[in-house]
Image (cartoon, rainbow, N blue to C red; front, side, top):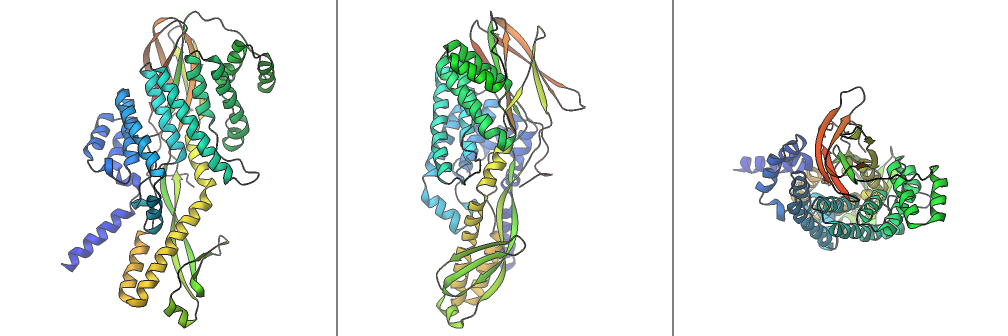
Length: 474
C-alpha cells in the first residue's frame, strides 16, 4: 500500500514538473499540423478546462481555432469570455497570494499584457470578416483603453534612460485602417500618426522595426485628404517620401498575414546559497552571477537560541521564452491582373514577448525568491516541532519548485499586412509565401470588392520550428 502511494505521489510530482506546452501536447500537435477539426475536438472534450486554472488560455485557444475555421461569431463569444476572465483575474488578490505561497502553476493564469491586447486584434478581425466595422471599432477603443492602463503602470515603474514596451504601434495602425474603412479620415490620420511616431521612437530602438511603407503612404494620404498641409509637409520631410495621389476606380483589399507561431514558455533554474541568519534573515546569494537578495521572515525561536548562521543550497525556477522560428520569411499578394504588393512586417510578437519578460525579469526574480523564502520559513517552522515531517516538506518544496510556463501558444510569431487596390466585383488574389532558397507556397483567395470600400482578408501560416527543439531562449 505504501509503495502504491509512493508511486502515485512520484507520478503526481513528475506530472507537476511538465511544462504547460507538454501538458497540452495533443492539442498543440493538432493545431501545429493544421488539423483544426481535431484541435477543436481536443479543446471541446476537456470538460474541466473552462473552470480550470488555465481557463483564460482555454477560451483564447477556442477563439483562435474557431476564427481559423471561419466561425467568427463563435470565436468572438469565446474571446469575449476570455476578456471577462482576464478582467476578473487581474483584480483577484487572493489569486496573486496563492501564486506566492504555493506555486505559480496552481494559481489562475492572468495573461501577459500583449496577449490581452491581441485578444482584441482577433475580435476586430472577426468583426471585419462579418462586415461589422462599428463593432471592430469598439474593439479598437477597448484596446486603446487597455493600452492607456498598461502605459500608466509601465511609466510608474520605468527605469530612467531605458525604452520600455508601453505603447503598441501595430494596434494604432489597425485602428487607423478600421477608421479609414469607416471613412472617419480624421481619426484615421491621428491613429496613423501615432503609429508612425511609436515605430520610430519605440519599435526601432527596441526591435529594429521601422514604420511599414504602407503605413507611411496611408499617413500621407489621410493628411492630404484632411487638408492638414503642415502635417503633410512635416511627415514628408520626416519620412523622406512625397505624397503621390493615386486614382482608384474600384475598392481595396487589406490583407493580414499571421506568420508562424509565437514563443512558448519554459523554465530555467539557478542555484543559490541560502544563508540563514539570526533575526529571521534569509539571503539568497549566487557568487557566479554576483546576485544577492535579502529577505526577512518570521524568526524561529529555537533556531535563534543556537545563535549560529546556516547555509544550504536551493534551486529556484524562473520563466523563460523559447522561440519558434517561422518557416516562411516573406510573402506577397498578387492580383489576377498581375499587380503585386509585398506584405510588410508590422508586429513582431516574438520580440515583444521576449522584451516584456526581460524588462520585468528582476520582478520575476523577486517573486520567485520570495516564494522560496516563504516555503523555507514554513519548513523550518515544522522542523522545529517534527524533524522528519519538516524533511518531507523540504523535499516536496524542492521537487515542486517551478516557474509558470503558461502562455498563449496559438498566437502568431509576427503579423504582416498590405493594401491592394482592386477592380469592383469578384476578384481572385494569390498569396505567395517563400523562404530564402526555397520554392514559394501559394494560397488562392476570392473576394467581392465594392466601389470605394475596404475588404479584409487574413491568413495564418502555422509552419514553424518545434518548441521541443529550442535553439533560442531567454
